[in-house]
Length: 524
Ligand code: CLF
Ligand code: SF4
Image (cartoon, rainbow, N blue to C red; front, side, top):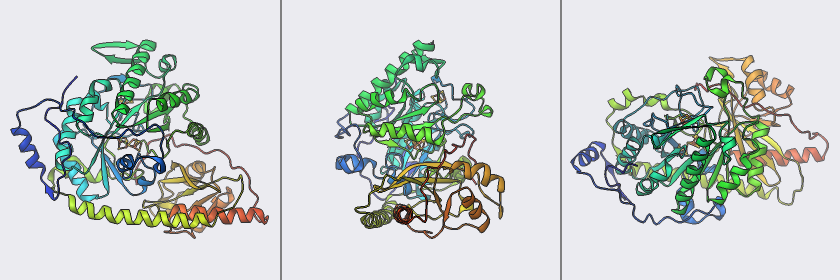
């Protein structure tokens, strides 16, 4: 195993402007010292606490992490830096031409960076996007198969941008070797991709692993991988490091088995479970893509997530399977604004005070949204019904209905019931509006198929033609909540819907299934 190159900053309560060049100079002057594991002072997060029942210390860690808090993902952004090219295992849903499919969907390739380039990019992005609160390393291979680059990057960033949370995603094979280092860098958030706890299932997902200078295949490979993943998980949670589990749902291979995985990770203290759909198409050139392995439908995915949630596990449903150089809010991709060439040409400084001032405004907006939701919920008080409906929402962030129908590249999906509004997923779609024209094919083959299980779609604006076609497909296109808060609007719509069902002007019926997009997403 490798040790960190330089002592990390344990709690650098820096303020004002920090220059990356100064940090690099300090590091160049430093003659090396060992790992300082130290006492992190972190509290144990428990296994499945929600925001309402977690300790204030844990909430402090998750409240502005867009992946660990669904509510935060409307307001706060993350960025990834692609510093980790190598991998030590092979997954049947991965083609090394693309990013690590444990965190990314196939079809996009990231520009690889050195740790110094990555650190400069982080500061450039943080200066442009003050609500960027988390830096994750998620590929394009496995971060812990590239430990020097990964930890050097963390070291640089913890010194120049001390308020940015550090995050890591790994396949777990070498995780137990690096837990001390992870802790010493104050990395509070680690994701492990665990697709199985049964090596017979694992043998269908992983053809080989490379471990301690030896290649293992089949069941033996899966057995070693599983044992290392669970050992790493236990080590992390025993130190209070919030650990999220990603699992790829592969129908016919591990879909039923993921309930057992869910129980296994919950009992070992995982904080959150993120079950993602397999994204698989022949053009991705993966084993699964080439042999026709399908991904789950929207209803299959939701049913499994609901089942796991019934077992009292926190489920993540807002994952966008983002690329290894993703930048921005989940669901938007601003990576093209920050190419290596443009970032290297920038004069960047890290202004912590401006970032904090901006984030204070975000918190005010968050509070106003929460108050509005509570007030709307009060109007549902005493309502009794088993009816649940899904609503698709076009949004570009801030928790508001603020995107035009034709400009939406994804819809957020909310379940409305007498319990309120609950985020249950998202669907990527082809753009309907192409250069000022409505694209009929996109409407029929992409948007309607993606939100076919929804009763309504909320938009900031929509034209007469798509509105009529959506209505013909049984989907109510609603623009009366334009620029309002999403949760409040979903609750208000549901209250009126229930009333209409009661007075007979609307007949409630179950909607059909919907499709999860399999192709690569191309940002508009
Ligand atoms: Fe990145 Fe992953 Fe950290 Fe988030 S992503 S390393 S935990 S900061 Fe988030 Fe992206 Fe899903 Fe990952 S939406 S793919 S879960
Ligand atoms: Fe690909 Fe990631 Fe699996 Fe490695 S861990 S084979 S990069 S999907």
